[in-house]
Image (tube, rainbow, N blue to C red; front, side, top):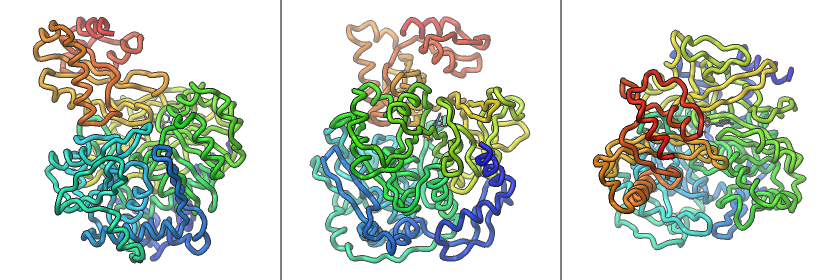
Length: 628
Ligand code: AMP
């Protein structure tokens, strides 16, 4: 690993030369004056004074050399459709979308909220925003009205782009009613809603506010919208992510740093070069979808595959079929998807010619050794575990085959990635831990290019949430436990906070509890994440009723459980729906009133609940135990 180590060391010891060199990967309309301005820690400003544009770098820059080559390959097994957009086609669609936004009065710095399934228009509108300097905020289609309303109120979009419906497992899932509901609850009202009508379900349009996309697109199909050259630190997007409170955080990303970081990662981490085909099966609503469905591959002159569908429909060979058909070089997926595939006929793994495929990357949740090993052996391809977060925008820990082919170990996301000065830190003392010692994974700031610049309109929360966890040291806390071994391999050991990860979806238990508590019968609740062999974790809710006698009625338990699940689904979406809801008279709490979640999780997973000296009422744990 000599080369990887040396490369990493340069990136930290001589940050400026390192990133000055990497910055040459993209087009700068105006060169930057300064590589890094770190005069106001922990706020890092990269490539100060430089002017560039994400859309120009992803689309226009490649038109001369790759105009007629595939750029966006859209595959939908939901509606049985496949469309290959060349770079020239993509430019045309993006310009039309940009012209639509301009017609609706969207200007540099205005927000556009995108609530769409995996259809190409999601990418068109993201790139269109980037083209005119508008800030996009994509909301995951699996979220429902409450999540959507919170994001609308925080981002205050001028325009919302949505659709009649998505589709899952061949069944349409209406989006518009959820959006209408969210707009009814939200305090902020966007001026316009653009609806891409897929004709999947009837869709009621609100006069004056809602506009149909198709006729506007037809009017603007030959538009050429000039690129707005942004200062490198101007925001490109805001993507909300769950934390420990009920309010999601708007992760704000810059422009120049993000373009440089993604472009470099496409080569060093993903081994890609212009003309290659990259396939990330993530949803655009998550950070992976932003960085590695839309921006990363396109910025590096690669084609990207955008997939609407599940990994098992029409059969569990569909991912491999897509790889063969389009000559995919790198696949990026999630451990949950692979655990699902593992349950199917292993023969399906060999039905297709996978000779184009060089490597498989898995991220977003812990990759267990068995799953990683199974896939790697079955396909005889390297499987690379990536560890990162919405906040960082690109991997923190990963093997870097574009720097050096180093051996990987199952269960470990390998080594710190260049640009990240990663540490394991003792939670109590704030001191660096040695090999083999468990601690909190932290990053010595400045964060590298492409990582979040702040929380949208809340610098104070940014500093407090991420940089004030350790005594006497300003370090970025990932809120993950981890360690590294004597050989320099790193391991991630779970969250330090109340964030859970269900099938790679990051969910805040506090947000789900707030929904449980809106049920009129519920007094209070605790939601925890419990180990699940397929999804990694699943949510489990414990509720205390205002009137426990309710449970004496026939069938009350099942009825209440179903009602609470429905409330959650309506407010937070199906992703947040807990596997089970159980009823107790009291929750296990400390004397100061904090719910002892770790003890609840331990009981649910059949482990010893550990140190309980601070518990107020030990009987509360017995109640949890008896409901299991
Ligand atoms: P998100 O911001 O939604 O990408 O979630 C980030 C969180 O997912 C991290 O803080 C980790 O808890 C978890 N995570 C992501 N990738 C990995 C990985 N490769 N191994 C273990 N945990 C991971």
